[in-house]
Length: 436
Ligand code: ADP
Image (tube, rainbow, N blue to C red; front, side, top):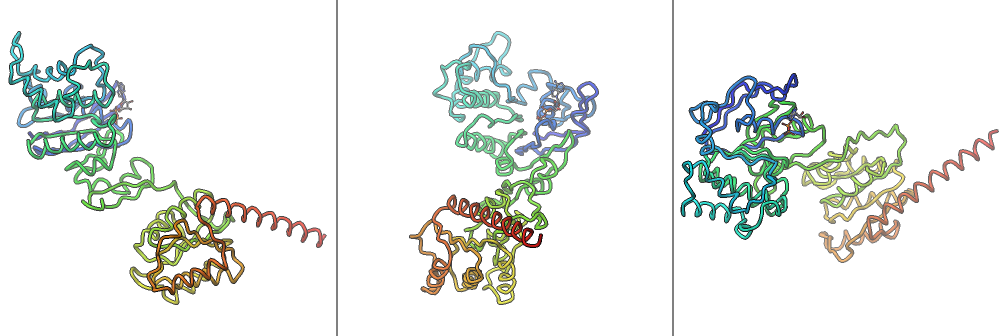
C-alpha cells in the first residue's frame, strides 16, 4: 500500500515540530526515517498513525485519506510499534500478541484456531515462542520489543510503522528483526516506515531514507543519496567518513576524530610517521589525540593510511597509486623529516616500491633525529623483496630505537619530548645568562 504525505505541518502550541513535510512512499518499500534527537521523527510517525492530527496537510493510505478510515479498518491496515512498549498490565506474551487479532473479531467473538495459528507464527518469526506464557511485565526491554513486533505481525497489516524497533536489541536480534522487516516488505509487499537511530543499519536495510532536521526534510531518496558525509555533518554536527560497505556497497558511516585543524604555528612537537598498508592509521590518530603535530609519508594515494592522514588533515607526501616512491617524492620526504623531532617507522609491508622510505628513516637517524621502529609482531614476515627490505630494516633498527608495543612508544615519545623541552629551557636560560 502506497503512502502519500502532503504538506504536513504539526505544532505543539506555538512550537512548529513538523514543517511542510511532503513525500511519497511506494507500496512494499522499507523506508527509514533518520535524524538527530528532537528533530520530529516520532511526531512524524504519530501523525502517520493518526495518534496526532496534523495542523495542516494530509496523509493518504492507498487511495483513501487517513482521516476517513474507521478505527477497525485502520487497525487492519496499519500496525504500529511504538517506543513505549511497557503497558504495565499483567498480560502473558501470548495474550498480548493475540490482541493483534482484535481488529478481525466481531463484538464478543472469541479467537479461532486460525487466530491462534497466526499468533503462533508471529511468535515464531520474532523468536518469542519460548516466552509465550511469561508475563510481559517480566521481560527484558529487548524481549518486550520483539513481542510488540509479533503483535504487529499478528495484525497482518499492509503498512507497518516502527519507532526505533531495535533500540533495546543486541546486534544479533537487530539483524534478525531488520532481516524480518525487510523480508516482509520485499516478499509480502508490506510498506514499512521505521524510525532508526543507527545510520549504518538504516543505510544497510532500507530501500529509501528520509533525513529529518528540525521538522524539515533535509534529504530523501536512496541511502547513497542521503547518507553522505556532507549531510551527516550538516545535521549531526559531527565529522564522519562515509565509505561503501565492503561487500554490498551501501554507505557506511565511520566516526572521525573531532575537528583537527593542525597548525604548525602552535609550536607543537612534530612527529613524522612512515607508514603504509594500514600500519599507521591508529598511530596517526593516537598521536594527534595526544596533541602532537603529525606528518606522514611517503604514502600511495588511496592507501588506507593515506586516507587516514587525509581524514585527520595531516600534511602528507603522496605518491601516485601503485607506484614506487619516486626520487622527487623521496627528496620532499627527506625535507619533511628533517623538521621532525621524532620519526616513527610503523610495521609497513616491505616491497621494492617503498624501500626508499626505509632509506629516509636511515637518513633521519644519521641526521640525529630519534627514529622509533615499531614492531609489535616480530614473527610476522612482511618482507616481499627477497631479503633486501629486511636488511635495510635491520640497519634502521640498529640506528634507531626498537619498540615492541604502541603504549611503550607513546611513553617514550612523551619522555623524549619532555626532555627536549627542558633542555630547550635550559639552553634559553644559559643564553640569556651569558648575554646578560
Ligand atoms: P525525535 O523523535 O526526532 O527525537 P520528537 O518527535 O520526539 O523527536 O520531538 C520533536 C520535538 O517535539 C522535540 O523538540 C520535543 O521536545 C517536542 N515534543 C515532543 N512531544 C511533545 C509534547 N507532547 N508537547 C510538546 N512538545 C513535544
